[in-house]
Image 1 (cartoon, rainbow, N blue to C red):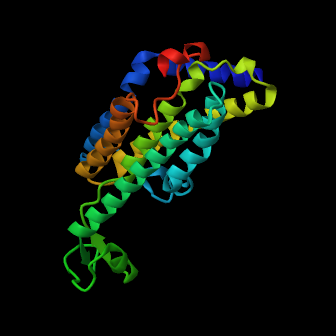
Image 2: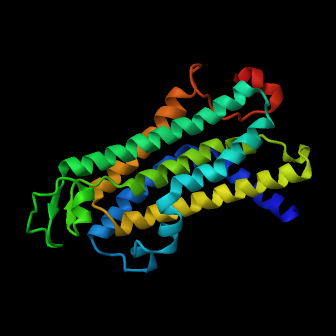
Image 3: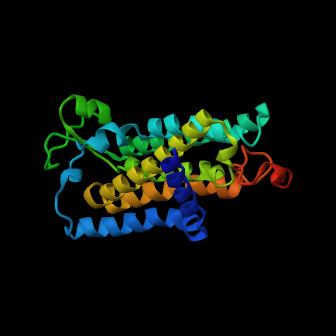
Length: 260
């Protein structure tokens, strides 16, 4: 338990550094541009992660939003209830999960629609024979052919957006006095916090792998911009306003009146 407390304290200290929190979103834009440049110049050798069948991609990235919600929902409930057990307060915090899920759904469905609307079905990998019988990606692939359209990188979007979302919603840990909790809730909260930080590392790593191995540069950059915009418009523009789910609490309970 002592070792876990040390890990949590170190992570909290890291995220308390203003330069880290304030510039975290720029990391994704930088990685996207740098990774795309390396890919176009063919300077990165093929590795285990250059295959989309690698374990992290199959078991984590492809269900990344599920992992994000699975770990973040209990953390959000447990950490925020330590600030206030008001039903309306906890409801607003849960609403942030619903808003984020709506953004994820709308963006990914829009990406699919754009790929369908701009694509064509090709009978070969060389893209020299067009089959006009199939007018959607799903029907084309079911027939064993190849669909090529403007494929905005869903991986770039969801990995960047999930990481930004987690960092925002785990901010209360910096003000939460875990020592005041009983042993079991304290241990569960600490384990969830460490797991969420580990999943952020996985998302950043797989975002970098996507940048250097997959998609065209504009596809990745646009997906990344959509993620940053989704985060910025909620946590920097909408959530500070009264009619919103509100920002995660980052002050001690006695200071809540100033923060409400």
